[in-house]
Length: 245
Length: 217
Image (cartoon, helix red, strand yellow):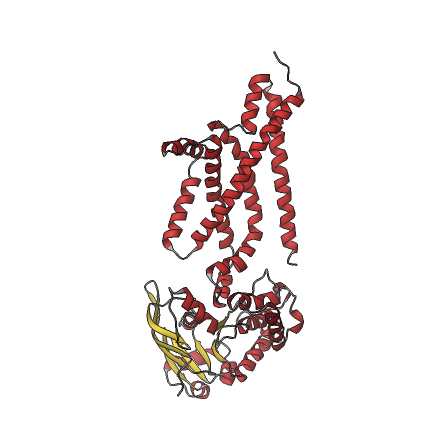
């Protein structure tokens, strides 16, 4: 067994008196694709947001590729965030920048990439997500699916070792979901380590190596997708899955 | 008695207008720079800084500019700084403007969706980089109308500096009135000059607003 790329131990997180993560232990190997499922309020998005420090947690440890998450150490956070990319439900493209500029901003600033090189890289990334001709477009000229694919390209531009996807198709019209999922599936095939909170059960079943079912702030059940979906062990998961049908 | 022609009146007012313009510029530039620093402090993650800026803003928003001018003028003398109407008016207007601009700009920054902070944070941008490249450019667009509205207030607010003996447009108007006994004529000229100063500012702001809107079709 290799050193895990992501290691979470005893992570607890509260919003005021409300404890939303009640001791999470999770290890993710390089190249693993993990789908996190669960009811809203089960803590799955919060867990994802803890991994790149968008949320702070009270106890526990979290390391990515040996870089510990230290909330009050700006340098450590900058190093960690370069290893962790994130894609959001609401895309969050920068509306005042063109598509190409959206992608090049962080590499230029954080990695001090040569401008000419980062431009070529941005163009390659856009080609990879099927938007080669959109380099000079403004975000609001794109459909939701296209915007989300730009957001994926933007995250990839930092060459992260792990990509967090927070319900990335939930804000999309149904006919646009497929194009985004295809891009993600491609990434999975190429060996990208993925952690995705998703409501797309068919997609999770097809792409994930491991599925994690969260319930009331805990990892309630986890395992291979065929086991989890085919033979759920706990009443809560049975209930969750039957509610989806 | 000496007779004053309309040109005499106008010429003397124009000379005094320089000082209104100069004082306004000091307030804009000084207040703008200081306002920006205070804004950064206000947005920072330090609770102490946030509270301090808040208190500062409350003090300057909650007291009349007239009192601030008096306090600057007499207060600086009290702590041993050799003061002049110039210095006192410049300092008071800078502090006053910075407090209001900070608050106006904070509102504009808060109007930017939280997702913009989160996305730029996720891309490993530092706090200052997030502000500089993501948040402030967007906030700038929506800040133009309220900022210019306030700047026009400041131009007119410089009139209050006359109370500490600063001879700007309003004070000059009063002095000329005392010499000519033609208050309506003189103050009409004063009003026209204020308008001539404020109108282009508003007009320029409208143009700028349109330009930045077009900037992203």
